[in-house]
Amino acid sequence: MSNTFNPDTPNIDAPAIEPPTTDPPPHPFEVSFASRVHRLPPYMFGRINNSLYQKRRAGDDVIDLGMGNPSDPPDPVVIQKLADAAADPGNHGYSKSNGIANLRREVAGKYHRKYGVRLDPEHEVIACLGSKEGFSHMCLALMGPGDTAIIPSPYFPVHMYGVILASGNVVALDVADSEKFLSNVAYTCENMTPVPKVLIVNYPHNPSSAVIEPEFFVEVVRLAKKYGLMVIHDFAYADVAFDGYQPPSFLSAPGAKDVGVEFTTMSKGYNMAGWRVGFCAGNAEMIRGLGTIKGYYDYGMFQAIQIAAIVALRATEATVENQSLIYQGRRDALVSGLRRLGWNVTPPKAGMFVWAEVPEPWKSSMSTMDFAMKLLEEGNVAVSPGSGFGTAGEGYLRMSLVENEQRLRQAVRQIGKCLSQSKTPACT
Ligand SMILES: Cc1ncc(COP(=O)(O)O)c(C=O)c1O
Image (cartoon, rainbow, N blue to C red; front, side, top):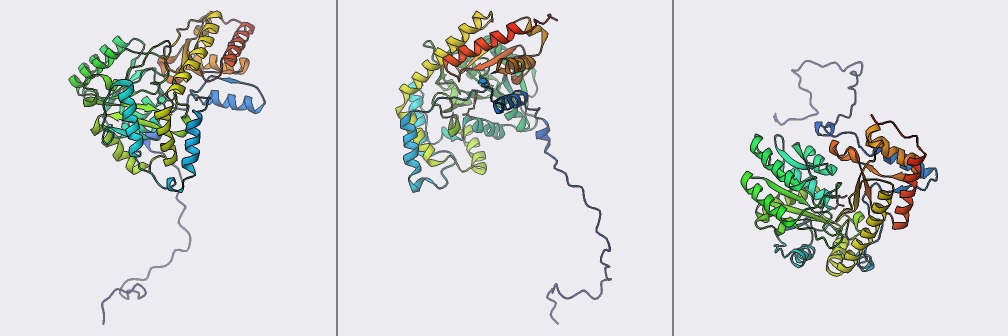
């Protein structure tokens, strides 16, 4: 007799098993999130966004200075190139996860033209689905449990939560004074065990609009080499600057490529935020790490977008410069209006935001979140409360320059009216 196993032949030596007469009690179904999700706080702008949505549904004309979401379109040649490339049947398959070679070459070309930095497009440049995607996956490539990153404070949320989601820890250092920031970095590295692994910097800074001069990055490279820090510079506002100020690239500091990378984006200066085009350039090994993670997670950007992005980088420099002038005019309209109301505001030299101190007596009598809600509910102006960028932002509002000058002047009038009609709170 064959001893081949036959699943249809019962084993005659085994005791018979009675079939259950009742179903076992159901195992209670539960969606249980990973612990990393529990490390995320409630979304700070949820209250503002809900109220904004309800107001707009009710037909109110709210002036929205909340998000840094550009409202102007990209240059028409870029839109035309996208349409042409989308009409080509060859552009609809999966593209390259790290970006097509011509796009990476164009990025290297811009770095050379604008900053005098030479990059190998094959190993020192990678395209990302927006710089935020690249940044968060870079955190995943570099950080894990027990690793610490130094970040600026107040912070753009992904600088904090990109690290947290990668299971790392953060030390947040005050960004307002760049010299003090650097000496705090050195102090932290001298006194913390283990020494932090990553230094995250972001100039022009969101939300505070703080800027630096090129010497800052020379010192960053020196500290990075001394303490073994890997540097990530988020250079999202590289192309939006005023009054002749030129934001410096981290990569133009001697030795920068030995220790770090820089993220740039087409979201801001090029008005292509919805297109999701960003880049990471610099240290080849860090870029290889990011490329490895991305290779598992995504198939790259729609190729037609990559082709249109090449045209944007190559042929629309004048449009990008003009967009900065538009933001500069808006900055002037908003800053002078707020100053007329008696607010203490410093005009930013770059970026898309005015970081305004909440005036007294409001600052001492209510939270920044409540003040922002008041401006929205009573003044029909939406702003971002500084507390959404960490406790260091308490007492400040971030107002973005995405509405035109006329609307910004109207926003100032509405804010002035709302506050003058309110009962002045007693200072606490
Ligand atoms: C500092 C900073 N980094 C990154 C981003 C995200 O840019 P992207 O659209 O390229 O993901 C923003 C957008 O607001 C930003 O302000």
